[in-house]
Amino acid sequence: MNRFLTHCCVGGFLALLAVVPSSGQKSGSQGSQQPPSGGSAPNSQGQQSPRQSAPQMQTPLYVNGRVLMDTGQPVPEPVSVGLSCGMGLLQVIRTDLKGYFQFTLGAGPQGNMAFNASDDVLVGSGMNGMSGTRIPGGYGGFGDLTGCELRVSVDGYQPLDHPLSGPPELGTIEVGTLQLRRIAGVQGSAISVTSMLVPSSARKEFEKGDKEARNNKLQPATEHLQKAVAEYDNYAAAWSELGRIYAATHEMEKARQAFEKAITADPKYVPPYVSLATLEIQNQEYESALKTAGEALQLSPSLEVANFLQAVSNFRLNRLDEAQKSAEEVEKGPHQNLSQVHALLSDIFIQKQDYSSAAAQMRAYLKESPKGAFAAQMKKNLDELEASTTTAESDSKSSAAQQPRVAP
Image (spheres, rainbow, N blue to C red):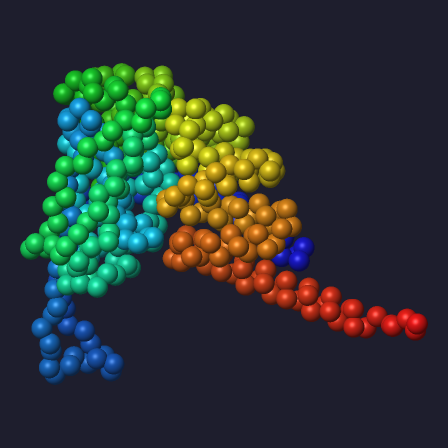
């Protein structure tokens, strides 16, 4: 069992998943993608079949809507909108700077794929724009979405759920307007007050930078964002986005300075705290990461990603009880975007030699993310753990059977 302990843990690369900068991950165009054109498939001998059936075009399904502030104004920054069916989170995208969003189902990855509330932990890794998830129906496999729902999740605002019902009309479901409501008593927010005071020229540069970042064109994105903060130095969202791009291009000191500028511009703006904490974990500055994530939690006490980052930091500092406590706080919540918390908890329990709890966490991860980033490793670890347990039990029974019996 000890041999299993030495090579089972995934904590060494678990932190890397937690700190993937989203700006370096965005790809594709922001607009709707066209379905791939059909083509001729060769037969088993590599020859063209004499009779070709007409290629079947995959018809995308669109889900459109708009997110507004409680004032009735469009959200001044991109916010995350998730689509869930049953227990599964299928996809998360981001709105544009006027609050509009569009899911394109059945046509491959979207350019407005999103991450979690802080935009630092990847959501739907390996989902490939939902191409791997099928719902019976006629539009690219996505037909009647009855039972599915949209969720708008923005730190500092009440989660907003909108159920979908009925088949689409001409391949499109129009959701209408979704309006955010502030949570009373919560100081922090994922929408900066400075974004509502931005001059139009700076806002246009931010919009251009955001679009370039979505298309993974980081150099022009950087240039536009630099212009945005040059025109309005207190533009917290632009500083935060600029920091994430610097982190994606491994300019760590510039990234740190940008996140600190964002925090200075708006001390109640949550995203730069989370981004800075992930940067500090990348740099193995675990004490600093604990402090920064703690500041995020003071602003938004239910922020799952901040608890997760504290759990990772405590784990790396070998403070297993503290790590377990923070990770279990994440586990108690929905944690749809953070199934890797089960991978972390499995590591913690292995270090504590609580192998049954570790196995339970591995199974929980595989149930929630059967195609997740750690699925193969979790399956391998679970198989090895179960084999080690079976061997230990067999050896124990064999040893007990071989002990000489004492005559009465």
